[in-house]
Image (cartoon, rainbow, N blue to C red; front, top):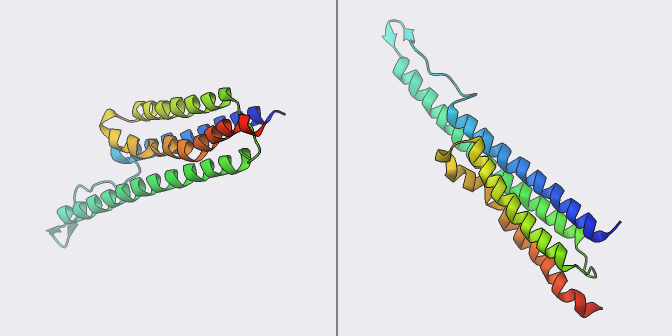
Length: 166
């Protein structure tokens, strides 16, 4: 099988995995912002004739906000780590020192990374809400950055060196 084709197929597979992490975490943050899977506020808590409802609702609000904060932070951290790992693995396994890369592969890689990143951003907004654009950006910046720096630049350097090796 042609190395060029293998690299393209693996790049598409890694882009799909990056999409799953980015869009999946964006959707999870949206669910948390909607209040799904969080503690419900209480209506009436009376202990020995005293009303403890405001104190209980304060604790509920604190736990809900802490949960949202930890979820957002861990989602950004895990998405960054996994996309970084995918980019490094793709780079290490597919681009060798003696490989010669064609111009069409370099162009395909650049456009796939850009289109995939823009589509992940758009799908993230469509799955959530335009009000959560900061979170969407927070979870979709990793793919273009890491894929361009780690994979694309190495591939482009192989293209420039390719004709000199012949």
